[in-house]
Image (cartoon, rainbow, N blue to C red):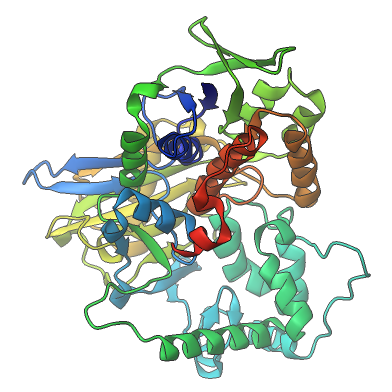
Length: 500
């Protein structure tokens, strides 16, 4: 029987484990053993059910990722396999609105903004988010020539360079930086657009303008909606999706189905060795050594570098060139009477130029149905980011008070209000940074992994930090190992994948 050792119990590692389980169900002689250094499976999918101290009703609280992009299929596919597709939750889009901090006040994101490009004239003309010089500068996108890219050369530049070139500095500072850079926890001056949002580069080349490109995209979406209207009574399809029970519901079900008896928590890997006969030995922080026919490393990118340095020093050197940033997520709940502000919005973005400690706020009780008891307001605040990396040195109490004060000043939460609860989730070096040159580094790393039989590398370090990308990376790592052993699964065929 072939044995795969999986290091890491986040969405990527569990994706790998569940894929091995399906291979075993398909009569392949294969098993796995998974090790996770923390006491909990799920990684950044961390959901807690917190009782209201006054009523006992439960808040469903996500401390890490609270959603995934609906258009990406891996989560849907696995949810169908698990029988939990109907447990997916859309956002409450009747309250869909984004607010931007400007000079300490909240300004609504104007209608027609797609990512950071305007596509409607009147809302753009009347918004106070941008100055008139900035609005006129953004309009120049319609006539500015597209960038010339020499044949055979990778079309790439930083987010900052691209947005300033097409739309101007204010477009970057007021929206692109907090929206795009914030989602990726990245410095716009260093962030590789080809590695994160290649569609923007392609849009410029195809349409000669971001505004024209987004207009074409909007027309295409509207045509599809018209051609395929939602069925009466069907669950709405929103931009983001989650699960009614929180995102950890997905990883919990994956762990249950794959078999928790083959998973150990509170046990970390310290060293990996490839033996002369092609087998693998993994040393654990308990002093144990386990052997297997293959190993899949599904850890943070910096941890993978440490583990693989003794296996392939060149690969480890490439991994070391991918930096990571730290952040914290702070869910905090109040009584509704302590929150006398309009609640018809989903999120707040705070640009770096505002110099606020809190980079963003999500209004969970308006965004996600069924996760907050009646008469309560649940928010998630974000602290950290590439220019505030000392956040993890502060105590929980300090971070919570920083958030509470920001909510009082920004939203009008009553100054004397005490939170019903507040928690701090720390993500130390949890967000890999796709800086300029990332695609070349990723390709070189993947080439070295491909050349080494029995090795798989999974996670968000190379080809996407979102939940669907990480899940897919774990499955692909298993597929790579199975193919080396001459094992195949029907689900990997193009026809089978289309069924999902």
